[in-house]
Image (cartoon, rainbow, N blue to C red; front, side):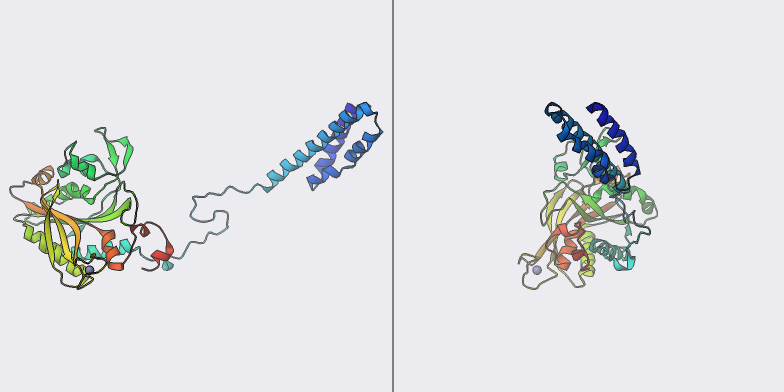
Amino acid sequence: MNTTERIDHARAALLTRYEALENKNDIVKAPELKELFGLIPTLQPDERASFGQAVNQLTQEFKDKAAGEKIVAEELPAIDVTAPFDVNSKSPVLLPSENGTVHPLMREIEIISDIFNRMGFVTEESREIDDQYHMFETLNFPKGHPARDDYDTFMTVETDKDGESLIAPAHTSTMQNRVLKKYIANLERDEPIAAIVPDRVFRNEDLDARHEHTFYQVEGVYVAKGVTVGMLIATLQKFLEEYYGKSLEVRVNPFYFPFTEPSFEFALSCPFCEAGCAVCSGSRWIELLGCGMIHPNVLRSANIDPNVYTGFAFGCGIDRLVMMKAGIEDVRHFESGKLDFLRQF
Ligand SMILES: [Zn+2]
């Protein structure tokens, strides 16, 4: 037998042995390999090197085979990292719901809704994706209007039937046109349109303690015959007094929004102090929300005659209300999912 034949002969014997072995790694201790290694010193010097190399290669061949076997044997079922529980465990245990708490923002939305519902407002939901027609056009921001730049938000790659990107609403006013149209029959019955829209909005913000890309607003809309600025101020004042459980002073300063005319910035006397505190920066006043009389063009876009009906609208950040009320220093806590924060409520 020449050296090549010896190696091939040994390989065949090793394969038979390998199949029978329980621990495949034991193949390196096989007598066939020992015999081959034992042969090396007996060979002529010119044969030793090539034969030794061939024996080493054969050994490595079986080592690799055993190593591959090991990987297959230890392969575990795939883990679905998106599963809400460990899918590999036999009976998934879901967290009992009684251990959870209502998110502080959701709780506040319920309180706010309750106050407005008692004042005769219905609660409507917003949406998390909308078209530019509702976000801007119906609110008296024509195409190219510079005030659109104040609402820098997120857009989709997909477009609507007008070829415009869909957007993540940057304010709950995106629902005004729909709310006005939905309840327009109220006006024919001589009843007001009165609705609030507390929901999630989005902005492209540089995040810090006061700015978050996702936050909550409550929008209010009221339309009837003979609605005045006095009714707007009284409604907001009554709401805030009920919300904070004390009488408050309010004041309005002129402001600009495309969808209201006139527009105001609404401030209230600080509900937390008598002589200045951190919440009001010592000024005793808190600038809280934007409001105004609904622009005639906004009423027209909902097929309401501005010569017959007038109305007011307001928008208020809910996160800020909760932050002031509960002394929360960083808006980013709300979306953080941190249990040590959420369990305080
Ligand atoms: Zn204060």
